[in-house]
Amino acid sequence: MAWLAVDEGYEVALVEGRVTARRPAGRQLKALPKALRDHPEVDRLRRLAEWLDRHEASCAAQVDAWMVSSLPVPTALLARVWPDEAWQAALRDLAIVGDDPDEVGFLRDATAAGELKVVNLDGETVRLSPRTVTLPHPVLLPDLDDVRDFAAELGITQKVEQIHRPTWVRPEGLSTTDTEVRDYAGGVFPSRFSLAARATALGYRVSGGYSTCKVRDTGRAVEAAVWIGEPYWDSESATGSLNWHDDEGRSVRLDEVGPVAWSEGMRMAAALYAGRRIEEGGDA
Image (cartoon, one colour):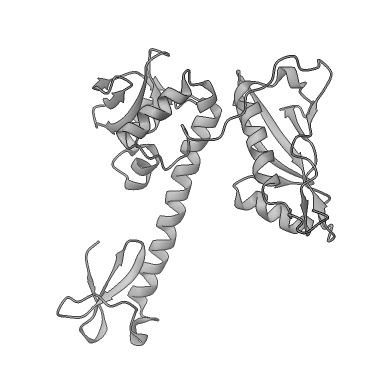
């Protein structure tokens, strides 16, 4: 961003997301001079920085939603948003699948003409022009360990957690009547508020007494929910069971939960449980 002239010969600009000032000679200052802290241009830059942070988070959240829901994304849309640095950061190096479901590649570029540049698992850069692509959830990727090893060789890092996202595979032989999982139940927190705050900080929605996440899996929308306690309960609280519901609010049997919904529900339950109070000492 260009430097803007303000009072007393100073100039200000956004540098790495922070309002920075420099003297006329060009030397950047470690902190804003007191005389500039309430300057209108500084305030404008602060508000711009806040908007950029929100925009960056919004782009990442949308890309994450595309992946978790396995929704087809128009290639033309990727080409349109790619010049935006926030969108590009969220999309770059994500594993994508085009017309061939067995051909996985890492997205490196999207041209204005709607052409995608992808590094395939043979290490070759190829150009694709499918009408839509999917950003597969890692639990759906065949040979996930090999994909991870190859990504490490290429030095790939992803802003939106995909290939290194923790995954859980639904076990075989589940009861045809069970509707809940208690693997991560019983994690004690000082209060219901602290448990709800953890859920929110992790990006989950808190509704009533539950932490929830919605997933579109096997062609239908399913919501995973973990009990976190009655609202306004001010005593200690504990994580409860995990279950899934359809759009009509009906419980989904465990043997009917799809692979993405299962993995994302278990991921939420495990992440909540990880913040529990750990007892120390001989009675721990």
